[in-house]
Image 1 (tube, one colour):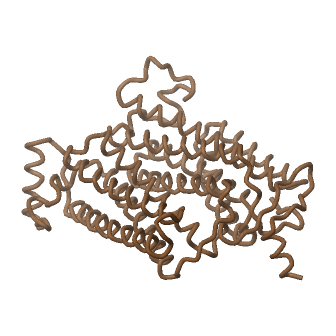
Image 2 (tube, helix red, strand yellow; image 1 turned 45 degrees about the vertical axis):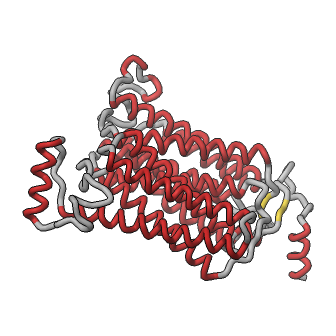
Image 3 (cartoon, helix red, strand yellow; image 1 turned 90 degrees about the vertical axis):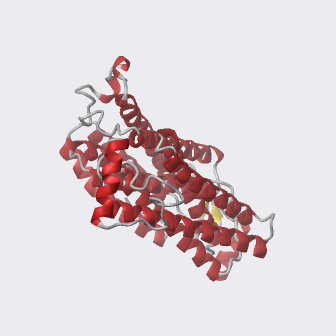
Length: 409
C-alpha cells in the first residue's frame, strides 16, 4: 500500500462525523474492557470452552436461552468484541479512503476486505497466520507515520491490525488454556483503547493546539504515564493468576507494613485462606507482586499530583492542560480508592471491574496529556490540509501551512 503522490506531513482538517464515529468506536472499546473485566472477575474465561464457535454453534447463532451463568459474560464479551472489530474496520477504511487516492486507495480497501473474508473462514491456522502478520503491519505503519507524521490513515491501519491480534489472542487464551496469553490480551486491550482515544483526539478540532512545556515536565509526564502502563500490566498479571487476593488486608499487609515472606509464613497464610474462603494457594512471588503493585500506586499518585501542580503553576488554573492534568489526578485517586475497595470487598466483581475501567481511563488521560504537551508531536507541529475529494488533493492550506511552505522556499 503506497503513499499518495506529493503527500505532505500535515493533519487533515477535522471532519465532525469522522470524529463522532471514532468516538463511538472508543466508547464501545471502553465497554468491551468493562465486559472483559467482568469475565475475569467472575472467573468466566473458560465458561465457553471452544472458539471461534460457542458450544459448537456459530457465535452469532448461539441461542439466547443458553446465555446463563458465566456463559452470559463470556459470550457477551465475544459479541461485543466482534462489534468493536467491525467498527474499527470501518474507521480504518474511512481514514484510508479520506487520505489516499488512485490505486493505493482501492488496494488498501481490497486488502481489508480480503482480511475480513479470511476471518470468516473460521479456521484456527488462518487466524494464527493473520495474527502473526499483525505486528509486521503495525511496524510498517509506525515507519510510515514517522515519514509522514501528519497522516491518520496509518493510525487506522495500526488499529485494524491490533484488533485482529487482540481477537486472536482472546481465542488462543481459550483454546490453549494459557493464563500468560490472558495477560497479553488484557494489556493489549488497554493499549488499543488508548489508540482509539488518540484517533479521537487527532480527528477533533484540537489539531493546532500547542503549548510551551519545559522538557523536564514533559519527561516527568512520560515517565509517569509509563508507570501507569506498568501498573496496569502488574494488575493484569495478578488478575489472571486465579488465586484471589494474595494479601487480604489494606493498608497493612497481614497486619504489617511489609508481610513476612518466608516459607513458614506463606504456609500459614495459605492455611488460613483454606479455612476461611477455600482459595487457591498463593506463593511468595504473588505476595511480593502485590506489594510492588501497592508501592507503584503510591508513587504514581505522587507523580501525577506533582504534574498537576506544575501545570497549574506554569500555565495557570484555566489552561486546558492544567484541567486535563487535574482530571488525570482525580482518576488516579479514584483508581487507588477502588484498588483498596477491591481488597476490602474481597475482590467483589463490580468493584474490581470498575478498578480496571478507571485504570484504562487513567492511562488514556496520561497519553493524551503527553500528546498535547510534547511540542514535537503531531498535534503540536502539523499544519492542516483539507481531505481528499474527487481524487484530487485540496490546495486550501491553513495559515500555519502557508508559513511552513514559505519557509521551505
